[in-house]
Amino acid sequence: MPVNVLASVEETVNREELLQKAKEVGQLAEKYADETDKNGRLPDEVLDKIKEAGFQKLLRPKTYGGQNLDYYTFGDIIRTVANYSVSAAWLTYFAIIHETWPAFLPKQGREELFGSDALMADVFAPMGTVTNDPDGEGYRLSGTWNFCSGVFWCDWIALGAAHQMRDGDAPEVSLFIVHKKDITIIENWDTIGLRGTGSNAVEVHDIYVPAHYVFPLQRVLDGAVAPDGNYEEDYQIFNVPYLAFFLAGFQHVAIGAVERLVQNFREKTEKRVRIFNNNANEKNAGTAQRTLAELNVQLTALKALSNDYAARLHRYQDAGLRTLDEEEREQLFAMRGYVAKTCTEMASRILITMGGNAVYKSDGSERFVRDILAVAAHPTHQYEDALAGYGSAILGFKGHPIW
Image (cartoon, rainbow, N blue to C red):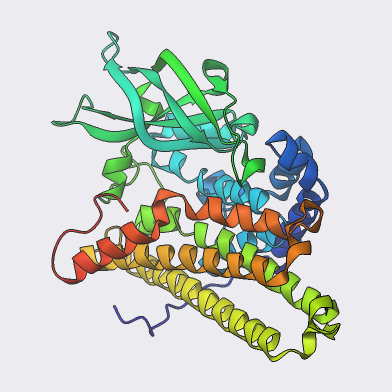
């Protein structure tokens, strides 16, 4: 599919309102930046603000309060929050996407989860152990999962496990949905960055999971929709490759963060005096001017790449395309990996070039650098894996087994 052919996009009618709400979430989170770094979690007020903004409902089916949300606005919401707080952007992104997987449940599960009006968390990693319950319908789940982002504020937690389902013929990865009251939170989130996400471990022991609380992840990745046939056929997330959509927001988190660093670099360059350079004004230095120009060109290129990714999602949606060929799938992985790697390189360069004063925590820039490094460590866009997978697919081989 040619990358220069844009799909017709129905613009989100309340785009400006949503971006204003995103700005307010980010600004509120930034007020608590030091406290957040110390405590390893955002204050409850920030999550209340995310929920008050209604971001979690944006990509639900319309029957359950969703709306048409174009993928450009989706990305801009996340990026706007990240201009102020990377952790808040991460949780805003997750609040939006996590309320898409209930749409793939049987009607009873959909209505119970959406009807609870509660935030949701998940861990895709298939770390759990599952057995069939003697009732002949449900399952029993045990295990420990790290990296459960936002778990402090979520009532429903979907946890990954590989199991041969009752109607299957081989083990497959699914997410088994449990209520917060049935989990134990292990507070082990002591990290270099993304500290405010509170991405602690969770543990469950022999918890019953009814069949209508199982999100059949592997089947959805293979193109399945709601299993009981009772769903909105024009629901936008039923008409795109699920993983390509689900992973799209990470790049916007990173771009929004590095955009703030470029802004910080410009502001400091305009005011900086170089004591060891004969008290020269830094803004007059050709080296600083070239660095600023290069950073802005890189930022423009990253935004263009993320816009191309959004355009592809719209084309898939127009075509009702739920699965991709190997090369296209891996190209998206490579695009995400390229954004992550470039953002880390830009962030490190900015911090070093701004000089010694930038390493103080009171400056704030070092926090954005740490957060970008933490974002880039996520497996869904690790550069080496991404480019190896894409190169392999270009040559006609299999790419990455998942991403």
